[in-house]
Length: 98
Image 1 (cartoon, one colour):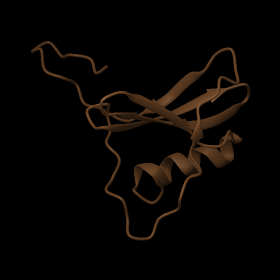
Image 2 (image 1 turned 180 degrees about the horizontal axis):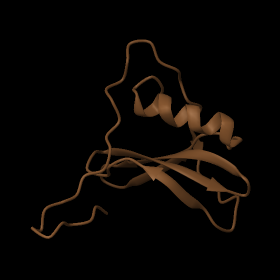
Image 3 (image 1 turned 120 degrees about the horizontal axis):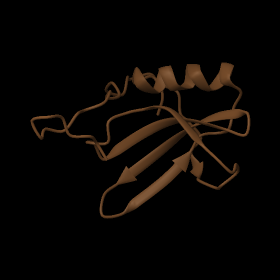
Image 4 (image 1 turned 90 degrees about the vertical axis):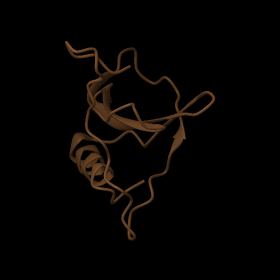
């Protein structure tokens, strides 16, 4: 949930860019608990129907996609090494991956 500022207004986080005509397809999978603790390194604003989180756990990183519309559905990208997950996160933010 987004935090409220002193004026009682929602604080928005970053938004993903519109999907580019040519983009990479991410193999989204059903979320399965694989690590005792997950650290969220970065996240997009949850004011939209779909939000994303760059997560780290068990020495690997992955992107979590949360879809909210009449319920909540969570998917994850493959669990990757940092050098592979961070570029995926950037592509997603730039609209070059979905």
